[in-house]
Length: 41
Length: 207
Image (cartoon, rainbow over all chains, first blue to last red; front, side, top):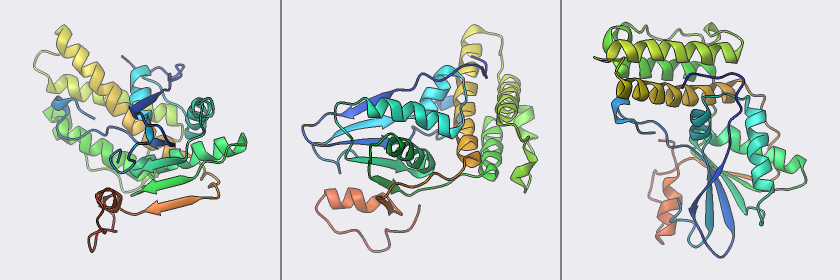
């Protein structure tokens, strides 16, 4: 998919774990690591 | 990190995944506004907003947007980093070298001045995408094969999203921090504390 300067990202919140008390929102990313062929972030 | 938060609910904001999925780019303030809108719509106000590493500027900007809307959320920054344009160039150079192939091998060392990038961030992102597409195509044996083309497209989207996020953070005006901001230079002490231990000596420095 090519870069689309007119597109807006469809942002989301992903649930990492559910719990009964307070909740936290963690801002981070699955950062790329290793060689590109691994395809992991 | 989720271990340290025990029985809390934990939600993740992953701007790189979201930008990659749409092959798009937004200034940090607009990206933060999108996430703030989602967080404000939750049934409970978060007890804390955690920003890890280079996500720190986005976490602070989300908190500022939430505060602007009347919702104060404390911020915890773990090993925070505040990218500049030099980091964009450094990471681009690293990625090009890691791709290999003729173009990647010839990738020059990054310029010493981050201002070497075009001023318009949209132009920068478009340029990065084209550059990486060329690199990956040149490094692939049969780039016109459908599976290879799909993989190249996916990698370009992911790399460009990462570098685009760094660029948006680098170009953003500093957010007005919320009243309650705490910083842990290394996330290790948090994990260690969750295990009932004391932070190991010398663990407070950045990784």
